[in-house]
Length: 171
Image 1 (cartoon, rainbow, N blue to C red):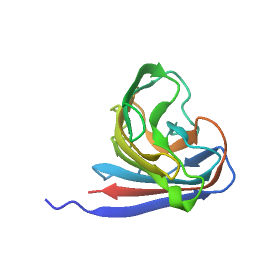
Image 2: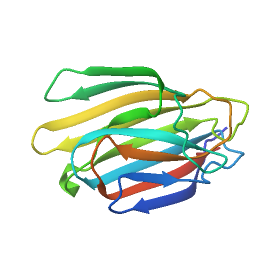
Image 3: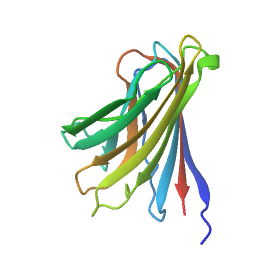
């Protein structure tokens, strides 16, 4: 069976510390592809994600587990893993200029299934003109059976000048 990618929704935010996109996981898709491009942020930093429940609010309870392998050209790799957190680490990213652009590619599974946990894998990449390449591969899970309607992403510190989130459904 051929896989098909369907554009669902886009959110663009300017000058904020968090970006939320909601009502973007309709039923009938096998998975969802989410592209996050954090451009013009205050600093290169770790980025986190929370899911939104059926009320439209973000889930901030200690319901997230994650593991990130962080690989940089200027230092040794690093493992970041934690259980029962209030958000999930998705990678290292951001850019002060377009020349240093970087972002995230997240594949999410089961958000529209209220009888299953929601899980994801993410990849991040950023080029820093001052030090080189950084990449990461992460996986995470929201450990409550509930309908998930969206996500919120945010940097560990600072505000973003311009962040774009695009959501695609995979059939």
